[in-house]
Length: 258
Length: 252
Ligand SMILES: Nc1ncnc2c1ncn2[C@@H]1O[C@H](COP(=O)(O)OP(=O)(O)OP(=O)(O)O)[C@@H](O)[C@H]1O
Ligand SMILES: [Mg+2]
Image (cartoon, rainbow over all chains, first blue to last red):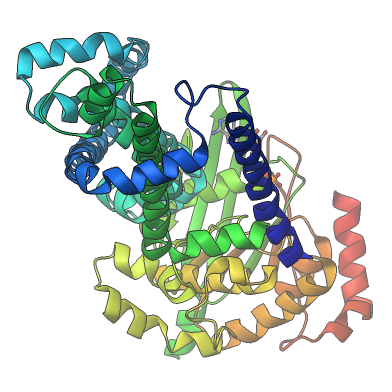
């Protein structure tokens, strides 16, 4: 029963995506949509192979920016979450500001960062941090505050210090929630780097895409998009793998629930 | 006759505890005594304030009035002396059973490896052999309670507060666990305060039973259970047992 359901779970989405791709391919091949406006999936595929040596350097730059921003976000979120969780005044003061800050469109801010920090990697990394930091922080805070009160009281009855309660109960209890935030942030990190690059720079997938856009090479645009999708999926699963390694019990617990 | 004296030594005494939550009185003058190696049950209706008594003894709550004395010393509002098992098992899902059992030792500052070595021999006594490296979610309800009890025991071996440890178990498992508890306790040197609202459980396990009134809780009556030990399930149908049960029922 369980096995057939999991096969069903992967067959349905894959099958449906294949059908969509087929419709797309046919409508371009049959001339319903002009090839210049929308390249077919096979066009994109062959273009990708063609430009791979070209795009490789750009991909590395984008990945570097995404990783740097992602890890900076984790560090920042950890520090802030611990501060906000242990000193309630800080939480009350900062939380609303953080929420409001998320409503400011990044596209508007990104050019400012270029003005302030130039065309290097810095402004891109900042955009990544702005995108990734929030989901990580929120998931950490949620995790920290969702810990069973009685669990904490049990430790208190043992005369545990605040640090011990944090280390032994609160922090590990927040890990599941933390990792779900990390998964979201990891996928966003690639997109964040691209948004940052869109504003200008020397290299990166975003830069590459603006260049090919001006030469109306849409097949190359789509090939670049494909690379971005694959990268985002890869980091998503990398985080999942990390979770499996760091917390084997959490995956087994999920399995048990199903 | 040193042993005789030891056996009558008062481990824990509550003197006239009063507690109210926002003008709702919950405890009204609770007094009781727990002697060395005694098993005492607190029997009371739901919501009467039983867990509140334990929260005060463990030092998590301060009484409005009254005193908690442990071995003659005032311990009111002080944590870290008695071990406390909650109604829920509260095992940490990310720690293996052996590391859950080690938790009290880790809190006291012991290294992980040494803590493991210290608790390992007790797995046999507690009927948990072979489960050391399982995670709590891989255990049945009864096994989880055993693990929680072992952890409780590792914190303080002499005074243990058990708050309805078998409340969440089905009747059959519960009966097994009661028998198991009696067997384990024979091998330990513990004095136990046990909360329950199951009359048979209270009689079957205890040396004495304190019966509480509805909220606000006061001690209605103290009943001495003069049944021979070791006890087996056959006493459940004995004359004395049924008389005790009838007496308690008439009080509630
Ligand atoms: N921290 C608290 N603040 C306010 N009221 C509380 C608090 N803790 C307990 N109470 C109230 O005090 C009363 C006694 O609670 P307590 O948990 O001691 O009862 P209990 O006898 O253990 O009940 P049960 O059999 O359901 O476990 C209840 O009415 C409860 O709502
Ligand atoms: Mg209770």
